Length: 258
Ligand SMILES: NC(=O)c1ccc[n+]([C@@H]2O[C@H](COP(=O)([O-])OP(=O)(O)OC[C@H]3O[C@@H](n4cnc5c(N)ncnc54)[C@H](OP(=O)(O)O)[C@@H]3O)[C@@H](O)[C@H]2O)c1
Image 1 (cartoon, rainbow, N blue to C red):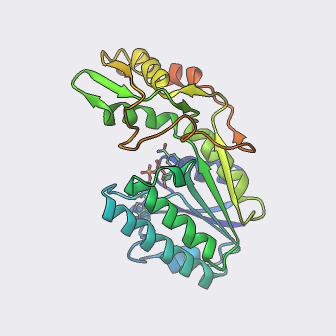
Image 2: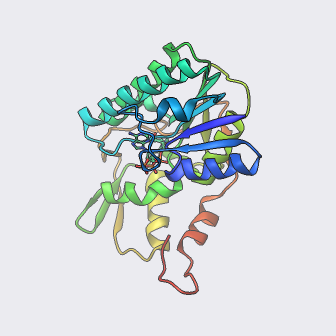
Image 3: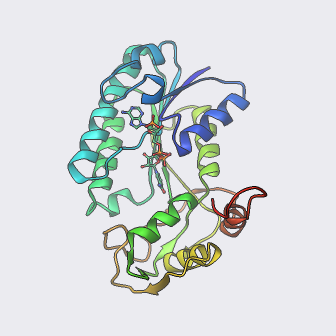
């Protein structure tokens, strides 16, 4: 089966490409670096020729409101049009748990627009909504930092390892389309402030985490269950503490770090 991974050089894409190849699939890792651009259309027809499955794990280079909407609308339209022309039978895309609850943010308005284009297209699809990646936890801290303090709301939070996201996507890409949205999440539920506090402590980062119910997440007002999946979600296996231990252990020849 030929599977094209658009965004195949990214965090999730590169892991997904490896997992699919390990399963014996014929995989194309498509991205601008490899001459395939979902915005300009460059290389798309050739990459998708003979493909059964197209997996969209792209991300926008800019998260500014207008730019990110433009990216996901243009990219998704091009991928769907070229996919339909190439006879793709399953379109898989990665989105985010709680997208419709975070529309205060331009990024999530863009993700919802992406989802709606996929749902309206003629290609059978599976939309996979994941919770925040463990690898994204650092960025959440940075986005909520003022001086030496990180202010975050103590809402429920169920992040997952990028590796588990890629495993779930690989399984879904090799299965029949569900023509619906599937939610995936980490195996444990925490409080957002607590995870960031543990992450910073493990990295010996001196910033102090302040629990503040009125603080925003990524500029968005969130409530208790905004970031966590509904019943029926599938769970990854990797526990945050285990991931954090390996992400922060000192390599034999290098400096501490991820
Ligand atoms: N961060 C989170 O916690 C989280 C949670 C749930 C879902 N998600 C979703 O997961 C998806 C993937 O995230 P990620 O962290 O793996 O992204 P990433 O590491 O930033 O990778 C993005 C990929 O998109 C490619 N790309 C960018 N512009 C492109 C274009 N015009 N044409 C084709 N490919 C293009 C990049 O290629 P180059 O390397 O060549 O630029 C790269 O391969 C995103 O849609 C995001 O919304 C993220």
